Length: 391
Image 1: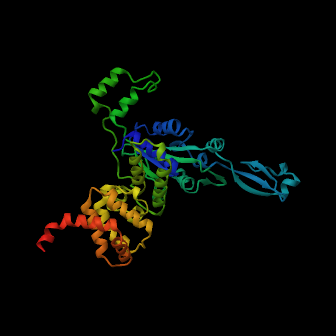
Image 2: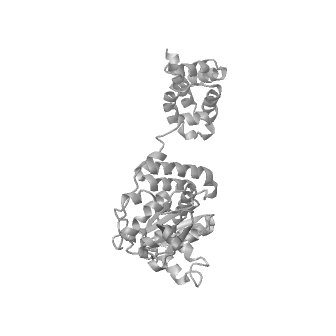
């Protein structure tokens, strides 16, 4: 189970990658505090909170009002109520009445801070059904009515789960638009927080309390709500696009993440998008991009030499050799895999024996290479010496 520090790194990575996040956890799991800490301490951006439990659609989308649009392009605002006939001027009568939408208060804050921040939707699964329907256009289109949310502002929602709470299950169309992360502060993290100077209005949590929890950690939380069946991420076209965003975000902003947790953060974000099983398959050793390794051996991990040797030939069959690709292959065999001479020999022997596709061209380049011939001959004698003597 991820700790809070890793979850914070996940929020940062999702922020950089422009992926909406949905945090799940029991009550008092510090979801709100976590978001505000990341925004203030790491991202240095503001947070605007939307409390869905008590808000109506108009609080999220704004309210309609009547305007008069004239032929010369001038627009006159009549407010929420229509004017009485005796209040209408000749010019007013000549215009056309149209309905417009006043921006809600939270959006005014967003527009006053164009550099961006986090729009935090708290208690999202406690929203009334008509309020919950406002989420879709906000998250997917980044707009509502005539108003557009700047791309510099990112979405983070949070909810409690468990049958103890008065919550509603949001529909698939809404839930599929988030990366879902679980928040479970450990006892150690709570103790560290409690010892901080700003933990409470009085300073650190009282020493008597801290000492008690240290000696009896099982008493920190009892009867905590467990995860319900709820929503489980599943892969789809959109989530795979966001997985791509996350990887690009990791590659471009990974230096801003905690070095010890950034890889875990990437895996958690991907898992929050496509689910546990598929997430594991993406990062498993079952996949290796031979073509990419040939283009840049520096990306090659020496522990993959066994699988590399097994999967190399199918790639060489469909890859036309160039001088650079050949030199890269030599580097892998003779430099980067120098401690695995047996596997390097298997690579050379497999290439020489294959005549499919472009493999014959690779084999000819190896046969003409004096370094490879010497290497091949030496390792062959080491590996097959006894067999040759019997022959």
